[in-house]
Length: 490
Ligand SMILES: Cc1cc2nc3c(=O)[nH]c(=O)nc-3n(C[C@H](O)[C@H](O)[C@H](O)COP(=O)(O)OP(=O)(O)OC[C@H]3O[C@@H](n4cnc5c(N)ncnc54)[C@H](O)[C@@H]3O)c2cc1C
Ligand code: SF4
Image (tube, rainbow, N blue to C red):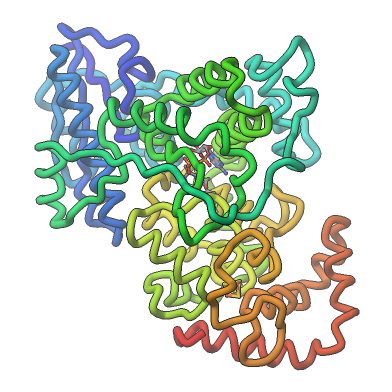
């Protein structure tokens, strides 16, 4: 064999990356199950199962197609690749650019040859050339450029539907007396069973581990959810854990689906006239806007960005993140239970519940980041680092987002049905039944008032502190809440 084509577990697509130029008679495909990675953290079992089983299915498909595949378990990725290189007499390693700084460093040390990573719609240098001309990295500006560049939902040089943004039609609370479509179940085969046995776990039927299953999920979303995606995309409901979200992030992130395929399916459905523009636009914004922006920012901001802690947040990770029985807050208990069940919740619980709680309690950003990376099915370095450090907990001092996403119970009460059955009251900021989010929101603003008063987007909120006649009482309650959260009693 003349070349070793390395495929990491997040580039599982036949038509992209190194496989584009693969030759069955002269190339060996290398895939490594790193034991250090598997045993290195207390990963959510569903996440490990999904990543490993998808990779083993992919290797099997390549073998069935006639490729020589060397799929092996090794202490770590470099060791595995060195073993393969030894077997094939020093053949060169070729791979697509890796998705994290850490893997890039490891592959560079092995003298691997990189081809551009085409698992995204925006080359890294193109994003950098946009970002380096911006005063502030507004996603909205990037997104509009993407719409024009990729010619998606455009009518000539104007946005389809006459506007770039339909947020005014969206952001609805959860609907009442509503029947949600059934969840799509993915059946398990022999490879799945073997992987589950090795991991000593029983997988749910929530996540597909094959290309066929990922395509079925895309089709199910387009037919059953897409038309309603926009209006309820920010709502949180006790009677549906996924609402009208697509559940496509795991497949987009491990390569079983390419964003171009998802966009093509969405555009095709929009052209039938059955999908309103507010849903089509909202979904397209997530894929060509947010997803590409976050990946671009990861590479643009560099490897040290993850270490930011500009708000000096040093509290240890609260016990409720690991165990939902350690809290009485209905919204958090329900969210952490959902994560334990299937390693997923949608963007609003991630941002406005989990990250918001970490932000207002002053939880250490790096500890929170590590927890989020461990428990989500779709967590990867490139997506978690900007979403947490920049968007979730404002640890970069506003470099990525000009304003922290801090909110009290009123927001959560408006966008969900958690509060009605909670022991706390979202309207109260003091007293034993005050909503911890409401109390801690004001306490957070007060703790950082000097920093935030300088920001034109925050000064009004900080000014609101002056209207609180009960601030001393609130500060006392905030201390009780923080101590109670640490003890798992709130
Ligand atoms: C604090 C925080 C942490 C997050 N961590 C991750 C993560 O580890 N992995 C991940 O894939 N997404 C992450 N997201 C983004 C988003 O929450 C998930 O992509 C989404 O919930 C996945 O479910 P879905 O496929 O049903 O998404 P939908 O709501 O159906 O959206 C469609 C797609 O848009 C993309 N997308 C939307 N928002 C983002 C975003 N902010 N960043 C990147 N892609 C986006 C995803 O690929 C998603 O599949 C995070 C968001 C926040 C606020
Ligand atoms: S009252 Fe507060 S803690 Fe309870 S569910 Fe509502 S927002 Fe969450």
